[in-house]
Amino acid sequence: MALIVQKYGGTSVGNPERIKNVAKRVAKFHAQGHQVVVVVSAMSGETNKLIALAKEISASPDPRELDQICSTGEQVTIGLLAMALKDIGVPARSYTGGQVKVLTDSTFTKARILSIDESNMRADLDAGKVVVVAGFQGVDEHGNITTLGRGGSDTSGVALAAALKADECQIYTDVDGVYTTDPRVVPEARKLDTITFEEMLEMASLGSKVLQIRSVEFAGKYKVKLRVLSSFQDEGEGTLITVEEDKNMEQPIISGIAFNRDEAKLTMLGVPDTPGIAYQILGSIAEANVDVDMIIQNVGHDGTTDFSFTVNRGDFAKAQAILEEVKVKLGAREVTGDNKICKVSAVGVGMRSHPGVASKMFKALADEGINIQMISTSEIKISVVLDEKYLELAVRVLHRAFGLDQQ
Ligand code: ADP
Ligand code: ASP
Ligand code: MG
Image 1 (cartoon, rainbow, N blue to C red):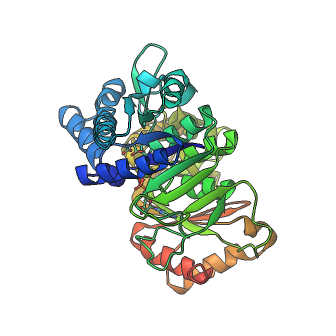
Image 2: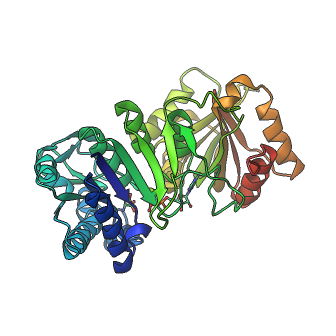
């Protein structure tokens, strides 16, 4: 008998029929004698609808109130799934994040989990019940409802698995595992049987939304056995996220291609080339709670330099307004911006032992006439910023160039 945490994403609980199917799958594990905790997302599209509704009232919704609103999507699904389970004879009980007591900090809309009280869940499991928990949400020390950021139900699932020391955390979604790249963009993408935590962390942070990055961090930190599977197939082992590289296999140089459309670039031209400018520019941006990703400062000439960086597209206007103010203070010449860019990245631990990956990537893009605007590298990834219109082409070309479409 094992303790299993199963997380079902929005599409997997997207309508009553699918919720009944999830109930059947859970019932099967329960009948085999396993203890099962199920974490669910809102039905697909619901969170987007709730956010859009809030924005009809207020252009920049109050974060606390936004979390009150957004958390309701998951509350509907837990009730529906618990009912579906009871209807087929499986004892079940639903919990909101607050009822479990998933304690978080008070950073509304992107709260971090601090602790999880397992006592209610444990009592129900010991009594033979299936526990159904609302993903994506928690409660802060003052009793305010918080949410964990988009895609946060993955993190709820893994965090519950860590707290309960579950034997496995299964993430059920609309694809049957982690692929070499998003199979919706490259149909030749291949499912990976295993991927290391390190690579999965990079893939998630560089835009592969199949797992929320924090869920991978949690799983790595608390040694949760994590697997991604399809909720639409009865067979298949999905993808196992592993601690160790598979020593038996010839390690591919690149394991996957990740991409992110949610990017924007800002440049301050003609900044006086003096100590402290990076601090003055980026300090003001950080104060406004805007995350900065890639940064480039050019070699100075004529006593001035150009300074570029990227931010999330949603923060573009805010960052641009801040830069206009900083420009005046610094006596810089001009602020320019582009919110039609994307980032495409090649990820693989095999890169460590294989030089020449970057030049192969640059050549493949050059052969297609794709201009690279920015580059950043780390030990196991290379990212490039491109005009958004090249995204699909670049991903397909790189996927082929690194032989990811071949077995
Ligand atoms: P859920 O609602 O179940 O959480 P998501 O939409 O958040 O599902 O994540 C699953 C989606 O992630 C897939 O439908 C797929 O389009 C996308 N995706 C992006 N990159 C990858 C990848 N490397 N492997 C598999 N899926 C990926
Ligand atoms: N419902 C939330 C979202 O759409 C959380 C999740 O699906 O993981 O972002
Ligand atoms: Mg998701």
